Image (cartoon, rainbow, N blue to C red; front, side, top):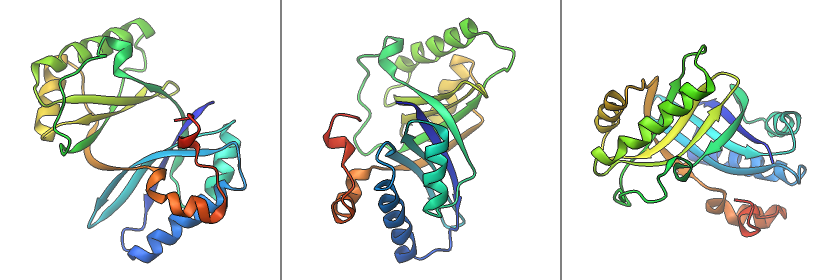
Length: 205
């Protein structure tokens, strides 16, 4: 099923209870859209900023946009993406980063004139350089082919290590942000309350 990244800029002054109400409303809306699933979110939560990249699967952009609009949770844009895993680039085995290592979202904008072969070579080069940085682990990426942009998730002890890796791989980083992953299973009770199917229990994940 197609995958979509929903980019959100939210009101960082909202109280904890108001934030929870937004989450409840979002999950309740999913009950009206049985083909749409919230897969996970990666959240920047700072004193002056509350932003997220939320991943959804759904039949088409129209359905995912309708759900995001209906639940009244603000979003900046919704983009079709493809999920990319390290195993596709020879990284079935990676050195484990500590379980409590920070999670970073690295966004990159590629050369619009770059060919598919050049982009593929760049990704292989980036993957090949990981072994030079103990404690750095590539988790997954989301590729926006229409804009030639990537959003990559890494475990690392610091953002500095990601900059060092990018320099060695000769691949630029547009932004590097520490994020927290939020999974629907964290809201399992709300899914039960509203009778929304728990997709992660059916092998969709």
